[in-house]
Amino acid sequence: MTESAGETSASASSLETQEAPHQVLLVADEVFRGSDLAEELRSHLQSIDGIEIFVISTATSHSAIDQELGDVDRPKKEAGERLELILSELRDQGLDASGVVGDADPNVAVGDGLVDFDADEIVVVCHVDSEREYAEKGLWNRLSTDFHQPVTELKVPHPDGDGSAGGVQEVEHAPAHEKTEDEVIRETRNFPPLRPLDVAGILIGFIGTVALGMISVAAGIDDSGELSGAAAVILLIAIGAFLINVANILGLLFFESVRYTGLWEKFFARTAIIYTLVGLAASL
Image (cartoon, rainbow, N blue to C red; front, side):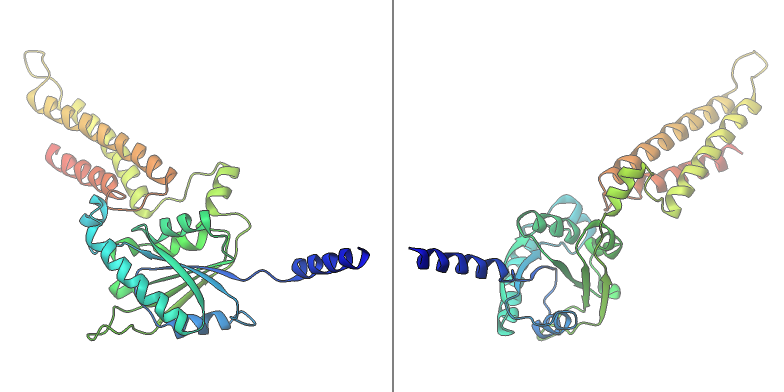
């Protein structure tokens, strides 16, 4: 009885000391060479034996309109075919890999994958800058700050004419984060950083709206004591500018709060700038 208990204790101790496999979350919107990933992993791991890789093949659309309207039938089919090719490539390298088709946005796909897969590191395969898809716009800026795990981005070209995968042309690395950018912002109550276009939209909108109001006052009233036609038109333009610029600020707050990136991300700022400048030109 004592011997059996000793064997059980030894077995339990052995299991406790056995290292858990290194888990890699791989998100890809393009096929690539499995040897390139294996080489990248070997560059910072002692061994790639026993690594577990969970692949998410993103259903990325090829145009901004399709991406925003959620046209996913064709992208899902392409993502499924890509997934099979990627899994085959990785298994040929002796890597333990499984996967699913995921969200159209690579950054969202990473977040979804981390819900069910406790990754030690994240690898994202996307296109080189000159060939990037709409959903890849600003991708690295988000990947490098949104997650606790270290992130590697492998940039590849579109497949050759014969369909063969291109080699990795660029590599980006981001270290692990104790706190993500969102967590820091929430703790310090800082407003998210603004893009130059956002700053321009707010300043031009504010100054332009005030200027339009002053111009309408300067236009004054006509001889009958009524508001002149020109002043009324300018006042309406000023009211429109005010409403559009309020919408710009509210839209900016909302988009930043949900970390939205897409077709409408710069719409309000551009509309505010164009409307205000055109309104000023028409009023002078």
